[in-house]
Structures are given as structure tokens and as C-alpha cells.
Image (cartoon, rainbow, N blue to C red; front, side, top):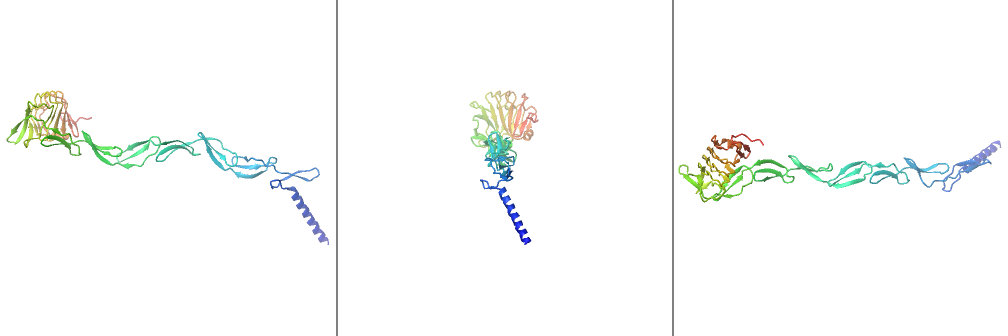
Length: 360
């Protein structure tokens, strides 16, 4: 009987404890439990109902909803930051609350693609100065490529594609795409002719000089022993200022310019000597006071004395051969007469009258 009474008392105490707990937490209007309030004068517990703020409270890491009176927090979450920018600064803003990081000025680095370059902020990717490349062609002996003069962009290197080009004085190899040039050389001209004209072809490229008609009216002498002609003078009917000596007359070669052949021909400005000529005799062009140019072929073998005596305006002789070939020509020690300064222009350089090289 006593055990039954004791069991009933324990059950009663348990029921009273549960009632006290249920009274301490009363559901608020949002369905959430409020924490216990202050005790009343009669000893009962005052119930606290949270008044949640409408806006988030935040720090640098997270945001939450806070009770206005007791500062209790709920809905604590990390910020969901999104990047914002203008032309000067960039920053981050939480998409759920009004938290914003400090403004940070753009830190730019340059970027490019095949067509354009621009400045890109490394923090927010704000772009400015988006401009097309200004390409400058660069080249070396093997290839060529383009580089933008305003950024670091560089095209792929492409090997040169060479073609041969020439002008009146020289020929060279040139890249058809970038104009890189190499192997520039003076023409090595070989005299050629037919019955009416004379011209020169370069033996290393396709260059040819203009075809020029032989001078008509020159005087000749035939040598029976050598079966060849010598030029002996200029006829009375010759009015040409540029004398072009033919390589053949009536099928026979013209091999010599006789002594005094053009002596005192004051109207002559240039003389072109063909490859058939082997010998220039003494005083052949002496006292040609207006003579400015003489062209000789590498086939010449012998030059006598005073051939340009008194040629006061003559400054150079064009020799269609090498410097060594010119030095090999047999020349009298007084071959220039009183002309002290004369330049021999060879295909590979220039010489003084004594055969020394002119360094330019």
C-alpha cells in the first residue's frame, strides 16, 4: 500500500514539472518559441515574445536577423557576394543584405587576342581601352612576324618567300611578303648585239639594258691579217653625242680603237665599247672635252698611253667586270695621261687608277 502511494506521488511530481516547462516557452506569432521572461511579483514567469528586425544585421563575414530587445540571432548565413564596379573602383555587395566591401581602385593588366588589346582589372574584370592592334612588321634573315606597337601581341613567325628583283644597277632577293632583302649584288653585264642594236644582259638575273642602235657614220679600217676592223675616226655626218661602237661590220669583228680615233671630238658625252674590242690604242679619246662616261667590257686586254688625255670632265669609267679582271688588263703606266683622278667602277667595287680599292 505504501509503495503504491509513493509511486502516485512521483507521477504527480513529474506531471507538475512538465507543466512548469510548458509554461516557460510560449509560441510567438511566427511559430517560434520565446525565451523565459522576468518573474512577476506573484512569483510566476513573464513570457518574452521576440520582436525580429526587418533588416539584416551583418559583419564582414555573415548576416542575420536579430531580436530588437534581446539581441538573439536567427538565420545566420555567410554573405553571397557579387562584384560591382564603375570606371574608377570595384567592390563587392551581398545579394541578400546591404553589406558592401570597401571601394578598391582598379588594378589593370593588359590582355589581347588576335585582333585587339585592352586593359582588364584583375579583381573585377572591368575593361577599358579596347582597341585594335597596330601591327609593325619585324624581320630577320630567316622569317618575319608582326608585333603590335602598343601591346605585347606578336603574330606567328613565317619563313621568307624569296623572289629576285632588280634595278638598273643591281639585283637582289626579296621576300614577297615583308620586303626583306638579301644577296644584293651589282649586275655582271655581258654585251649582246644583233645587226642593228647593242645591249647588255646580266648573267645572274633577267635584267637587260635598253637596246641602243649603233652609231652610224663611224670610220673603220680593215686589217687583212687579223680579218677584223679597227675604229679609226668619227665621220663628218655623225651628230650623236652618245657613241655606240658596233661589235661587227659586214660580219667581221671590230677589235680595236685606233690611236686618236676620237681625238678632239668636243660634242661626245659618252662612248660604249663592245665586248669585241680587245685593244684601245694611244690617245684614242684624248681632248674630248665634254666626255663624261666610258663603258668598257671585261674582254678588253690592252690599253695604251694617254687614252683620256685632256678629258677634263671625265670622272669615272664603267667596267663590266670584277676588280681583279680590271687589274689583269695590260695598261701603260701613263694610260690616263694628265687625268690624275679617275674612278673605275667594277661590278664588285671601285678602284683608283692605280688599282687600289676605294673604301666607301
